[in-house]
Length: 512
Image (cartoon, rainbow, N blue to C red; front, side, top):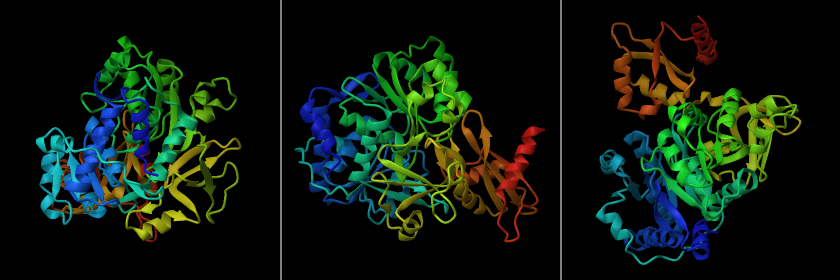
């Protein structure tokens, strides 16, 4: 099955129904959306010479063209490689090279950075920018019929970092994507014609995957004019987009309810706010519910099982009188209907109820493996289960509560940041002897990146010089927000840095 059949089905059933909107302006009906995707597919197949299974990069900020290109790839049986628009050009280069991407689409804001690295890429030699003459020519092609694909064939490479800091491509098949869409229908909501999905979160990541159930349900997808998350803009759109739904990191939800514009906002059109990508504090959840009403739904997932591990439905968040209410809204809910969740002990066996262990997942939504990385695949997909690297426990009712994140991942504003990647960048500075990065709690962003640095004597490095150094190596959002210069780092007998002691040190500092 080719996942693009979702769009073809919608175009046949509701050809004149609005499918894509930029702000309040309709830019494509379902028939137009399908025709444009088919035209892009024709160009990719016949003019660019790509074959089914070849990869196409989407280095694009949020825009309606992202969806046209995405489905164009699928119509042609190609594998889409959406890339976080916030990444540094050299980080984008690694993803394009690792995936073997042959054609890349990039929005204006990313063109210069990516164009500058094309000479270093052995395969990707063509860069196309929506809105240009080149892109317009693509849309003039006769639409291509959907290329047949097997359910197990890859359709999306979801690049997510690992413990080494090197991005890994979670290979998502047509079956995985369909399972993700159907999970939304079973546990989150049932989108339908006349409803609107607001793309305020990056479309290259989990929030973009929610476009699938909205195509299946024949609703409209709305990209804000700014292409970004901007609370006043969201409040302005709401009265004009009935039955609106949106994905938001907890920090985004908090920014909405605390923004001064909320006082005059008409939020009656909210149908669903799906939140995830990081923990929502219980009091923040209660505050959002008091402002928006019974519209909140929490999900827990990761790129290897996108947006689909557990769900805390609106009925649980609304059940204030339930004896376990506080525990429920502090959890991440129960397994989706098409997902099995196990908390494993040290022997990879099910841990007793209430006992902490590693969270493992089994489902048709779980990736087939990491792109061209057999060792990481074998480590993560053991004994038939996806080992998430996250730690938590299940209660007697099946609610999952996260207790910690192995791999020391930092979540800032709903975006995953892996400390080792930042550490490796800092260690390239000649004035840095040792470094250890942890997350510093932050009310707005959840966590900020904090670096503990042992400086080489006599080099005179400071925060400003280290920040400038990082600017040339990693994306802005990964750069440390603050630094602590120390004489040495706490270590165990084997020389491993004890990040727990650094966190304790930070906690004591905050308590003063």
